[in-house]
Image 1: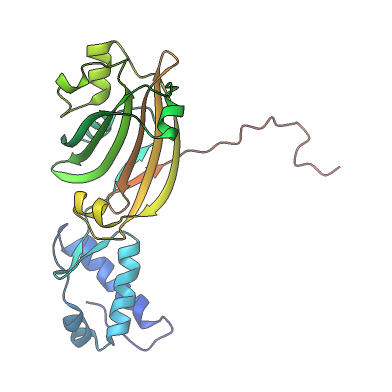
Image 2 (image 1 turned 30 degrees about the vertical axis):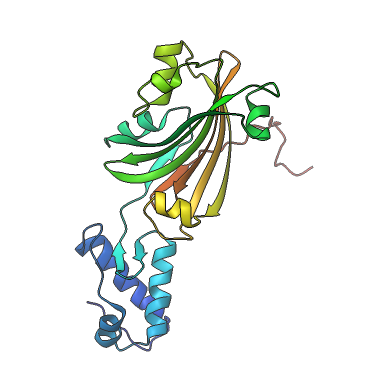
Length: 250
């Protein structure tokens, strides 16, 4: 194990490298790392140095803290390209088994943003569907969605333990073929953290999506993904028209 010295590199960065090597080469996901006291004694550093090193690796997603239990090696983040697919399709493409915990399914008057996105009249009802989505038994996302009741009148009779997109296509002939999506970040509050079995203030990736079939809005959903378990890949291109003399001095 590398020795922590009073060299040009700060001690917390040296310890961070040591812990990174431990987490990536020696320990399995969910394995505990040595306690703060053990790291202080083993490397001759202060508690502040240990915490700063661990904080950096928690931020990077390599380690995760569990209140009252310690610090553990984090599972690798699931990486996704932005594309039109259901959660179940997305997870199966990675060789993971998706599953669902259905929290609520009620016909209600939707909030104004959902009603507007779904082009609903002032008195129209929509199905509110709240679900926790899991991959290989690990909670990944909390979904809070709305679907027009007139389009899917007996949704409560359907099996919603798998792909909702498959139910829409197979049972109602509503194959999702387009979506508008917005992404932002926030921290998990107590309710969300409990449902996703993580710590309060865990970073979340939040997707708001309105999906349609044949130009008809079918679903408006906000999905909160655990930022320590999920990441998004995007390929960006410059689509501006280029001129032959661009970049040449005039």
